[in-house]
Image 1 (cartoon, rainbow, N blue to C red):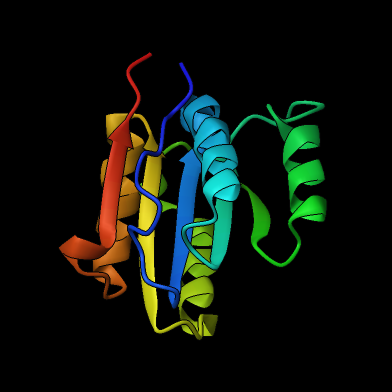
Image 2: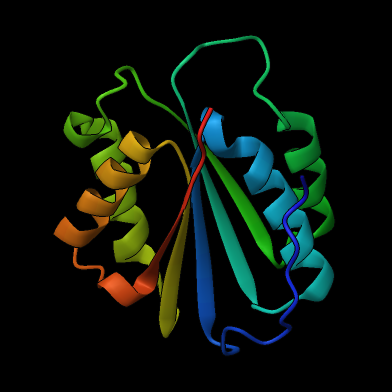
Length: 144
């Protein structure tokens, strides 16, 4: 079911929307990314796609690449392979998210997390540890 965005200006013009998803949440994430690009409610979006399995092709990899090229001024996709499903203890994930936050220059940053309860909770814990506040994070729990 595609995600519907009914409101046009839910973020101000200085908001950087960071979408974090794993393979469990990528279907909903892809629909959400397309919807936000259609209504253009925030000036910049980053998608951090975290995956565990080393498969030949990630779900929606080609489509995300096309969207990233077409909307190069509005969307950047980062693909991050992790070697453990325990996200809380994953050093590469921690280092990437920390560097990502430290390099961000936007006035306002919001996080939207798509994935299983365990994934979302672990990513939230990491974001809180790195200084994010509760009002900056929105979790979409995917039950598979």
